[in-house]
Image 1 (cartoon, one colour):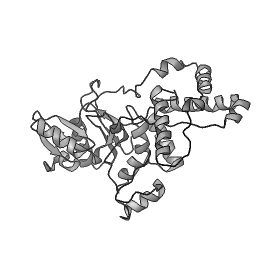
Image 2: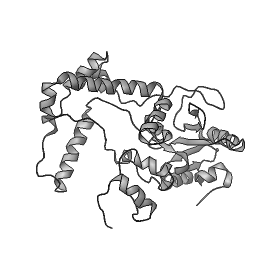
Image 3: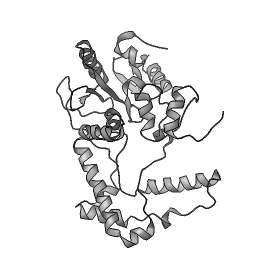
Image 4: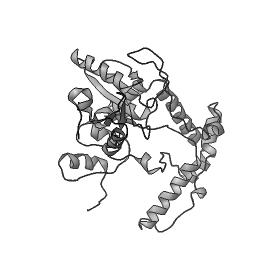
Amino acid sequence: MNIITQAPEVAGPALQAGKIDAHADFVPFAELFPYRGFARKIYDGVQSATPTFHGSLVNAEFARKYPEVVVAFLRAAIEADRLMASDPEKYSELIEKHTGIEAPVSYLFHGPLGLQTRDFTWKPEYRQALKTSIDTLHLMRRIDVTPDPATFIDDQYIRAAFKQSGLNYDARLKNYDKLPLKASDAVTGKPITDTRRLAGLWVAGEPKVRHYATIANAVQDLRKLEQAGKAVRAVYVHDLIHGIKLLGPQAWFARDAQGEVSAFLQKDAAAAYASTNKGQLLDFAALKGQGAVR
């Protein structure tokens, strides 16, 4: 095995050309490449039980000299979060317009129960994750020193931004919830209360994603839509074990003895669940009616 450093912009074409076997990357590429049809996601960071986060860096001297600029920037980020939460489909379309990242991929991250929370608070786990990153880089001999994160993590600016935005920083610091889903099943019309087997369809030409309490209901609607000649931009399901949102065509499924369908990121997890529950292992094509797969 030969491991090299390669930017996602380079790795994409390399994967397509068969020049590399796999690529480890950051958002949105692990979902973007499969969505575009030339890769399959086989591992998600959630499986490592190690948190990851995104943030902004500012020169310490600049921050001390112009704190109002830093706080204003963070307030703008908080407002962007509010807008995204209010209408994730609309702003996913806007992201596509300006970045070229397809809206269904952005929605995978920023929609209800998505892959990202857009959390701005410095949770203890994030502080530890940063320390682990520093220790790892030192172990790999990429850096010569191991600075203490406490010496350069400064949350006074984000706290000020929260306060000026009328928000409670300490309350959000204790909150680990994803953006909640408030929707009814598109087939039954009943409110969705159990999201373990949640599914969604983004139909071309429709401004909002359709939600379903079960994968079976989503597949039922998908068949009808395709028979009517309508295009579906994306199919979403949720991994039963980790709760992460997945692209349906890239997932594995298990139908148990009672006919209930569950989704999984990895084939071996789906196979194990199917075996335990006396069911069938299915890929996406089989789920739509072609039978079980080995």
